[in-house]
Amino acid sequence: MVVISGLLVFIGTMMSVHTMDALENRLLGMTTNQIILLFIITYLTTSLSNVESSTIGVLSLMTPMIFTIFGGSAHMSLILAACVAPALLSVISPIHIAGTLVVSYTDEKQQDAMFRRLLTIAFFIVPIIPGLTMILPAVML
Image 1 (tube, helix red, strand yellow):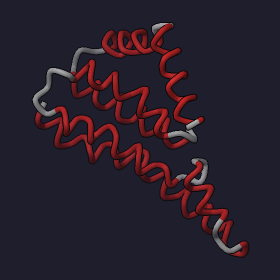
Image 2 (image 1 turned 45 degrees about the vertical axis):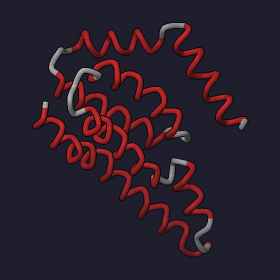
Image 3 (image 1 turned 45 degrees about the horizontal axis):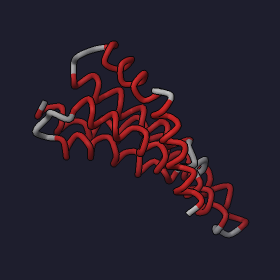
Image 4 (image 1 turned 135 degrees about the vertical axis):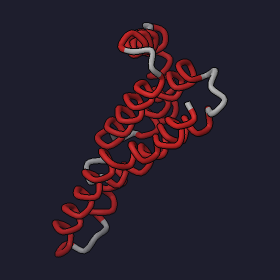
Protein backbone atom coordinates (compact mmCIF):
# COMPACT_ATOMS: atom_id res chain seq x y z
CA MET A 1 0.00 0.00 0.00
CA VAL A 2 2.76 2.43 0.91
CA VAL A 3 4.73 1.71 -2.27
CA ILE A 4 1.69 2.05 -4.52
CA SER A 5 0.60 5.23 -2.72
CA GLY A 6 4.07 6.71 -3.09
CA LEU A 7 4.14 5.75 -6.74
CA LEU A 8 0.78 7.42 -7.35
CA VAL A 9 1.91 10.58 -5.57
CA PHE A 10 5.11 10.60 -7.61
CA ILE A 11 3.25 10.19 -10.91
CA GLY A 12 0.70 12.82 -9.90
CA THR A 13 3.47 15.25 -9.04
CA MET A 14 5.26 14.58 -12.33
CA MET A 15 2.04 15.28 -14.21
CA SER A 16 1.15 18.39 -12.19
CA VAL A 17 4.50 20.05 -12.91
CA HIS A 18 4.15 19.01 -16.58
CA THR A 19 7.29 16.87 -16.64
CA MET A 20 5.57 14.23 -18.73
CA ASP A 21 4.40 16.84 -21.25
CA ALA A 22 7.92 18.22 -21.50
CA LEU A 23 9.37 14.75 -22.12
CA GLU A 24 6.74 13.98 -24.75
CA ASN A 25 7.31 17.30 -26.51
CA ARG A 26 11.07 16.77 -26.43
CA LEU A 27 10.76 13.28 -27.91
CA LEU A 28 8.36 14.51 -30.59
CA GLY A 29 10.65 17.46 -31.27
CA MET A 30 13.58 15.14 -31.95
CA THR A 31 11.87 13.35 -34.82
CA THR A 32 8.44 12.66 -36.23
CA ASN A 33 9.48 9.22 -37.49
CA GLN A 34 7.55 6.75 -35.36
CA ILE A 35 10.09 3.96 -35.80
CA ILE A 36 12.85 6.15 -34.35
CA LEU A 37 10.55 7.21 -31.50
CA LEU A 38 9.75 3.56 -30.81
CA PHE A 39 13.49 2.80 -30.80
CA ILE A 40 14.22 5.62 -28.33
CA ILE A 41 11.34 4.82 -25.99
CA THR A 42 12.05 1.07 -25.97
CA TYR A 43 15.73 1.48 -25.19
CA LEU A 44 15.07 4.25 -22.65
CA THR A 45 12.48 2.16 -20.83
CA THR A 46 14.72 -0.91 -20.77
CA SER A 47 17.78 1.03 -19.63
CA LEU A 48 15.90 2.80 -16.85
CA SER A 49 14.27 -0.42 -15.67
CA ASN A 50 17.67 -2.09 -15.57
CA VAL A 51 19.03 0.32 -12.96
CA GLU A 52 15.84 1.55 -11.27
CA SER A 53 14.60 -0.49 -8.33
CA SER A 54 10.96 -0.02 -9.33
CA THR A 55 10.23 -1.24 -12.83
CA ILE A 56 6.58 -0.50 -12.15
CA GLY A 57 7.52 3.14 -11.59
CA VAL A 58 9.41 3.34 -14.87
CA LEU A 59 6.61 1.64 -16.78
CA SER A 60 3.97 3.85 -15.20
CA LEU A 61 5.91 6.90 -16.33
CA MET A 62 6.61 5.66 -19.85
CA THR A 63 3.25 4.05 -20.66
CA PRO A 64 1.29 7.34 -20.86
CA MET A 65 3.93 8.64 -23.26
CA ILE A 66 3.59 5.52 -25.40
CA PHE A 67 -0.18 5.99 -25.58
CA THR A 68 0.16 9.69 -26.37
CA ILE A 69 2.74 9.22 -29.12
CA PHE A 70 1.39 6.01 -30.68
CA GLY A 71 -2.26 6.20 -29.59
CA GLY A 72 -3.61 6.38 -33.13
CA SER A 73 -1.78 3.27 -34.28
CA ALA A 74 -3.76 0.15 -35.15
CA HIS A 75 -0.92 -1.95 -33.69
CA MET A 76 -0.90 -0.41 -30.22
CA SER A 77 -0.67 -3.78 -28.45
CA LEU A 78 2.49 -4.69 -30.38
CA ILE A 79 4.03 -1.30 -29.67
CA LEU A 80 3.21 -1.57 -25.98
CA ALA A 81 4.63 -5.10 -25.82
CA ALA A 82 7.81 -3.96 -27.58
CA CYS A 83 8.33 -1.24 -24.98
CA VAL A 84 7.29 -3.15 -21.87
CA ALA A 85 8.62 -6.71 -22.41
CA PRO A 86 12.34 -5.82 -22.46
CA ALA A 87 11.89 -3.68 -19.36
CA LEU A 88 10.34 -6.61 -17.54
CA LEU A 89 13.15 -8.91 -18.64
CA SER A 90 15.81 -6.52 -17.39
CA VAL A 91 14.79 -6.95 -13.74
CA ILE A 92 17.20 -9.88 -13.57
CA SER A 93 20.05 -7.39 -13.26
CA PRO A 94 21.87 -7.71 -9.93
CA ILE A 95 21.53 -3.93 -9.60
CA HIS A 96 17.73 -4.28 -9.61
CA ILE A 97 15.98 -5.45 -6.45
CA ALA A 98 14.84 -8.75 -8.03
CA GLY A 99 18.41 -9.65 -9.05
CA THR A 100 19.67 -8.63 -5.62
CA LEU A 101 17.18 -10.99 -4.01
CA VAL A 102 18.35 -13.83 -6.26
CA VAL A 103 21.98 -13.17 -5.30
CA SER A 104 21.11 -12.91 -1.60
CA TYR A 105 19.32 -16.28 -1.63
CA THR A 106 22.22 -17.98 -3.38
CA ASP A 107 24.72 -19.96 -1.32
CA GLU A 108 27.50 -17.69 -0.01
CA LYS A 109 30.17 -19.57 -1.96
CA GLN A 110 28.33 -19.00 -5.22
CA GLN A 111 27.16 -15.41 -4.72
CA ASP A 112 30.03 -13.81 -6.66
CA ALA A 113 29.51 -16.17 -9.58
CA MET A 114 25.75 -15.55 -9.52
CA PHE A 115 26.31 -11.78 -9.44
CA ARG A 116 28.61 -11.98 -12.48
CA ARG A 117 26.21 -14.31 -14.30
CA LEU A 118 23.22 -12.02 -13.74
CA LEU A 119 25.26 -8.96 -14.69
CA THR A 120 26.34 -10.65 -17.92
CA ILE A 121 22.75 -11.57 -18.75
CA ALA A 122 21.64 -7.99 -18.03
CA PHE A 123 24.35 -6.55 -20.28
CA PHE A 124 23.11 -8.78 -23.11
CA ILE A 125 19.42 -8.08 -22.49
CA VAL A 126 19.65 -4.27 -22.63
CA PRO A 127 21.18 -3.89 -26.11
CA ILE A 128 19.70 -6.98 -27.81
CA ILE A 129 16.17 -7.73 -26.57
CA PRO A 130 14.65 -4.26 -27.22
CA GLY A 131 15.87 -4.41 -30.80
CA LEU A 132 14.37 -7.86 -31.27
CA THR A 133 11.01 -6.88 -29.78
CA MET A 134 10.86 -3.81 -32.03
CA ILE A 135 11.13 -5.75 -35.30
CA LEU A 136 7.43 -6.65 -35.66
CA PRO A 137 5.99 -3.25 -34.60
CA ALA A 138 8.54 -1.45 -36.80
CA VAL A 139 7.48 -3.49 -39.81
CA MET A 140 3.81 -2.79 -39.03
CA LEU A 141 4.34 0.97 -38.68
